[in-house]
Amino acid sequence: MVLPEPLGARPIKKQLLKYLQNDTSFEQARNYPAEKLGLEIKAYILPFSSADECEAVVELEMTSGYISITGAAKEVIDDLIIWYGISEEDIANETPRFAAYAYTLREQGFFKP
Image 1 (cartoon, rainbow, N blue to C red):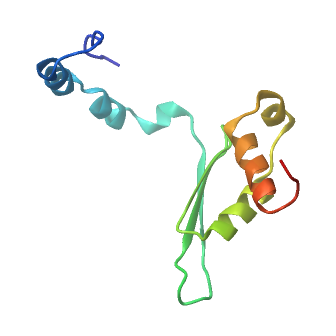
Image 2: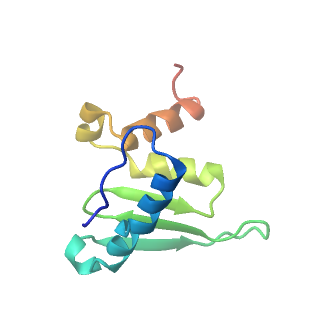
């Protein structure tokens, strides 16, 4: 990616505006071919029977293990985080996935801090 020159410490408003005008990194990322990323994305819709609940969307990126959950109640998100689990590598490296898992277990009362 081509990025504009980095801003120095304490830039003035004029420098910030110029930087923003010259920064095309978002457009470059948007135009990058998805097939070159090597991602394997799967998405699922979880329908709910209750009239006050909408459909939840669960997106999984299979190579990195990234998970995104939208449109679900906190209880459903917590259940999905526990269901998805963690690996030994997550524990050893204290990854965000491990942190979310441990936080969820604590919130559900499985252990005390």
